[in-house]
Every structure is written in C-alpha cells, then in structure tokens.
Length: 421
Ligand SMILES: Cc1ncc(COP(=O)(O)O)c(C=O)c1O
View (cartoon, rainbow, N blue to C red):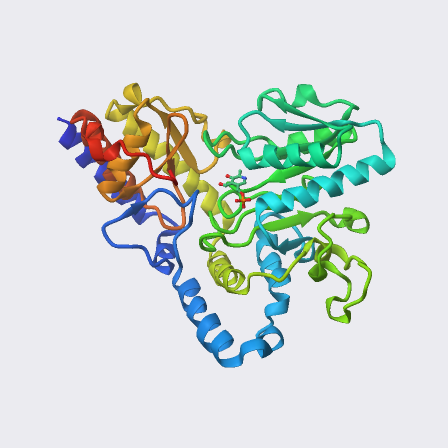
C-alpha cells in the first residue's frame, strides 16, 4: 500500500522535475553521488566554479605570484567585488554591500553604528528589541554590546508574532532575523521596516536564511542595515565570509568600533591615527581571508544564471511537495510540522518535532539523506532550489517512513550525540 503511494508520488515528482526552470543549474554543483542533500540551509555544497577557483587561488596566485597577487589578482578588492555580486540578490546598490568577517562580528559593528546614530538625534531611546527564538549569536552579541558599552540600554526579547505591538518611541534599534533558523517562519520585512520607521526606529536584519533563496528589496523597503552569510544558500564554503549592507543614506554616519587598518581611509599610508574609509570600506577591520573570499566570489557566479523569482517559486513548491508527501504517508501524525503551513510565510526549510529527532536525523544521514537536528527536538530539512529535485523529496520521505515504521532510529549507533548537530 505504502509502496504504491511513493511510486505515484515519484511519478508526480519526475513530471515536476521535467518542468523545473532551474533543472539545469544542478549541473553547476559537484554533488556527491547517491546522496540527497537537504542541508544547504546550513552549509551549501561546492560548485565546480568554486572548486576551480580554490585551486587557482592557491596554485596560480598564492604559489606562483605570492604577495604580488594583492594587486595582480585584486585580492585587495575582493570584499567590494564580492559585495557587488551579493547586492542584486538583496535589492541593494553595489556600493552598499561589502563582504567581511562573520555575521556575529558584523552585527556587533552594526549595532554600534545604529545606536550611535540614534544617540545623536534621540538619546532617550533605550531599548534594543530582538525576537525570542532568534539565532542565539544575535542575542549574545546584543547582550555583549549592552554589558560592555551601553549599560543604559536594555535588550528586550519579543515573540515574533508581537513585534509590531512592541514598537514605540523608547526603541532605538530593532534587530531581527528575517527567516527563523529553526522553524523557517518568515517575517514581513517590508511592513516591519516601514512601521518601525514610523516610530523613528532603525532596523537591522539578519538575512542568514534569506540571501540566495528569497528575493528581497532593500531599496524598495527602505531597509537601514543588514547582515548575511556566505556559507548557506550562497554556497561559499565552510566559514565563508559574511556580508554587511548599509543604506547609502547612512553612509556619512558609519561609526563602527572595530577600527582596524583595512577600514582606514588609506591603509597603506600607515598613519598613526585612525581615519575611517568612505562608505562600506569602513566596515573592514583586518586582512580579508583571501582564499575563502575567492571561493565565495566564484560560487556567486551561479546567480548570474538564475532569476530569483524562479528560485522563490521552486522553494515554495519544494516545501509544499514535501508536506504533501509527509501527509500522504501519515508521517505528520508522528512528526508534527512546526513551520508555517502557508508557503508565503516560510523560508526554504521545514521543521518537524519528535523526542528522537536527533537519532532520526542520524538514521537519515546513514541512509544517504543529509538533514540536521536543532535542539531540543527539531528535525530540520532544507530545500535549496538550485540543486534539490522533487524526486529527492520522495526518496527522502519514503526513507524517513521506513526509519519511523521500523523504529530504526532506536538503534544505539544513532543515539550518540556528536559535537556538531
Ligand atoms: C540566523 C543566523 N544568524 C547567524 C548565524 C551565525 O553567524 P556567524 O557564524 O556567521 O557569526 C546563523 C548560523 O546558522 C544563523 O542561522
């Protein structure tokens, strides 16, 4: 009975794959055979372009041209070059985005920038608002800023469904993640930004689960500041540099505290005193990680071949199709979905809960389906539209059904918790 169900879903999936406008993009990725990768929301896979560039930067640049490469291969300009490639994905101008450091470090810089701007015009504003269940690093960074530099400020955690009600004239900065890392719940970025502005609040968006999979428009929506990462849907590799966006209108007031030499107006003048560089350059701090930055630069070339509207369309369809398979196989009864059921309100992932979610994720991985686990009880499946096929979903869910029906996850080997989950 179940077998014929998955057979018919597989036939449906094959038809959807044949009509997929992005089908050919999968060929740009060097995906391991016999493996279904549903974890691109954590670490994107390698593209052939990135692999080629990694060898080129090490062998043809570093090995052959050594230090001359800073000029000869424009290593020094990589943060701006990579930023300019990310800009169209978020509706920004090239000069509004720069690649550097990690999301955590960039949030630290942006919080200082935004609080300083607010302090200059409305010093009585004392609240920094973020969402309960935000990715922990965002809250940790804000806690650090308040503890060490801004004791007069207060960090307030608000449920993500109550954000609009929390906006008032006491709020200096709203710092939100657009797509929740665990549930995939997506906030209305345009509406929240506009309502926050009506109260004189500056907004910082974390686009970790947005960039490269959800088209957004920083210009049209009046977004002040944003950060995002290079290693998820941008496929820039483990620890790839993150990026910062700051709207042009704020460029005269970008006073970030990590005043390292690369952010100086003239790094190679070696002046005694710090003078911030113009615009986004001032977000740089130390020497960029050239190998990582080069690989991210090459990975981004994939986006020259895709229309982000097609990416979003397929993302919603993939998650919907997965829910259909889960429902048809009655798996949703055992693994309830905590992601929004309306595709318009969710990112490119689905979260299911079960007391044995960790063991289930390990059993899936052992069978060639890479998913992940987020404490305390979430099984997370990510659907990167550039390389995940509809047929992969049927194979994954039928494997999941076997794992659940035969209680395979109870085997001892799947119970051992590893450091990275
Ligand atoms: C929403 C969000 N913000 C931040 C991070 C981590 O940022 P980083 O390690 O680049 O500082 C993650 C990692 O998954 C994330 O999901």
